[in-house]
Length: 320
Image 1 (cartoon, rainbow, N blue to C red):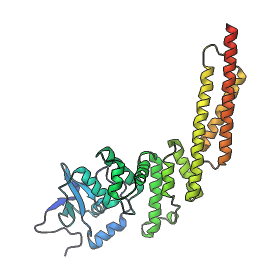
Image 2 (image 1 turned 180 degrees about the vertical axis):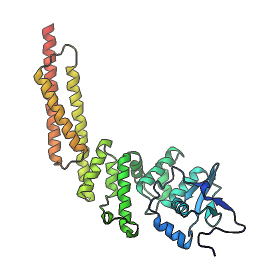
Image 3 (image 1 turned 135 degrees about the horizontal axis):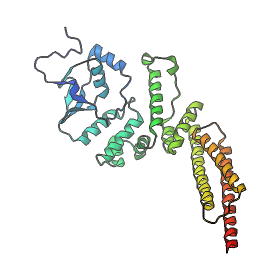
Image 4 (image 1 turned 45 degrees about the vertical axis):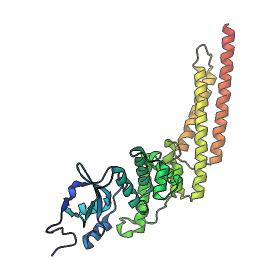
């Protein structure tokens, strides 16, 4: 007697499962945690066929990457065309990508970073404008742009942290797939906050993400915190410019630089570095105090720069 996944048949055309591949740009970049789906298919069979497009090397999945992975884990050798797999032959690669997108965009188990990567591929490879993509999928241009930001600006290490936390949250909603009580009831960061983290300089993103997560900030508190980080980032940049100006002035020919000025500049460098490390690490420091310290450091550097210019002017006048 045949089990639900027994593919014995007399006349149906089949495709060997090894000939069906998932494109590296497929919307589902993460097909983990499919134990429940695998068990369901083993018990009752494949309830929804996999949609594929034929290519020169075989077949590429349009919709059904997780189902395909589950079938492979069940060691199913062949899929019956029309029952287990449907081949869509009348479409372009861009059409396939849009079918894949529309099939997945409303699903809870497709994450925002995956969507962002698909939007990027549709624009950069197939020439669709982000506004056009938004119209087709029934979303706003801002929605599309925000997901693109997650894919293009959020650093890979932070993307990995975000996806891991999202997977832990999914696990907590389905305790059958949880291996540890430690993963239950995790803090879930609002996606708008993550989109705002992606707008920070790369070196500040991880520290900000971990600081928000550690304190379990709500959306309002997290966005306020990020506004402070952005302001600090701008002040750090201004501070670095002032420091470079002072150093450049002292490196000019015929300049007279006293030991005291060198000592002060070295001390400023240390203070700037220590503060920079704290900001990048997302340390638990008072944001207003940080801004005050940064502004004071900029003032000291500008004063030092002015003093060095005056010394330089006096030295050159004496030489004449």
